[in-house]
Structure formats: structure tokens, C-alpha cells
Amino acid sequence: KVELVESGGGSVQAGGSLRLSCTASELTFDTWYMGWFREIPGKEREGVAVLDRDGTISYADSVKGRFTLSADNDKNILYLQMNSLKTEDTGKYYCAANDWQYWSLRLSASSYHYWGQGTQVTVSS
Image (tube, rainbow, N blue to C red; front, side):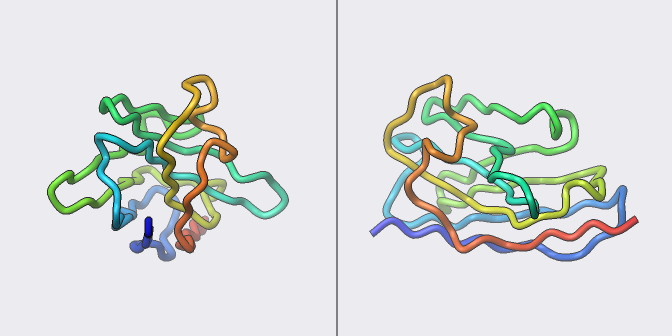
């Protein structure tokens, strides 16, 4: 059974950094599509950064240059390093996975069927 467990959320001041982790079970990153998403109150769940099974990484425009997705294939852990955090980055962050995908929809939440429980990130001014 695929299981995704996020950790690393918390509260930080604007300009600070956090690193999220997603420990994945029953899948490997070279055969599954992985992603980080966030849910901001009043908005739809949005893609933040995604990892194609060939290693290609895509970012939402709003986080380019500030967030970095990486993966430890040996430990099956997906990371999201978040630097220069802004108040608008506040939200609940989720790890997601799926075993197939349309490239054009890679940042769409509808492309993923497995989700973690989420971890809260709060950025204060």
C-alpha cells in the first residue's frame, strides 16, 4: 500500500527557511511521479514542485528560485527546501504520488491519486 508521510512544517518569519520531508512507502521515484502541493485557505490546491520519474523537476512560477525539490532515492524521501519564505507561502503542504501522468498536467492536483496527510507551514511578517 502506497503511503506518504510529510514532516518539517512549522512557523517561521518572512525571509526564513524550512525543509519539508516526505517519506514514501511501496514506490520508487524512478517509476512514480511525485509532487509537492499546497492548500491556501480560499484557494484550490496548487502544485508547487513536481518530480518526473526521469528526474525532471518542474516548479510553479511563484516559487521558482526560492524552493528546491530533491529526492533521496536510497531512503525514499522527497524533500522541499523552502528559502526566502513569504507570508503568501502560508498553507498546508502535501506530498503526492501517482504511477502515470500527462506531462501538461504535471502540476495539477488531479494528476495525483495518493496523498499524505499534509504539514502546516505558517510564515509571519
